[in-house]
Image (tube, rainbow, N blue to C red; front, top):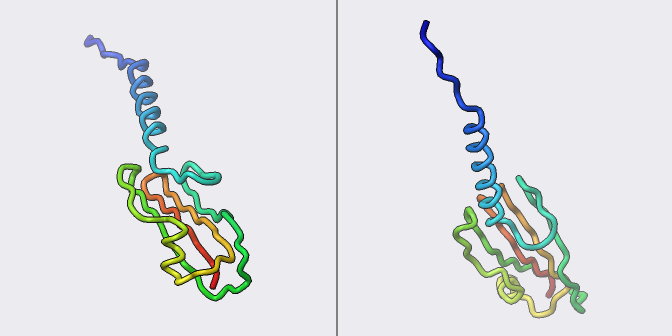
Length: 114
């Protein structure tokens, strides 16, 4: 009678654990830096500051984009958001964060004012 070769269960677990650790290490590269975030999906709005202006008729937005934590492009500064909206007097500054499993990340600065 032929002898069946048993598969090594221990080697399979080592591979699973190594893959899990690699994914957990790599996935953190694409997360946004502010506020709470979820491992799979993050979509939140955070307040940054409140200015002295009471005139709110313009909105400016400036964003930074990251792809897989390897490439990050953009200008998410307050100045860029003010330029984009033609704002000289600030009412509020907020931050919007979007993250999808660390593969795609967007962090935007939103300035309201006049």
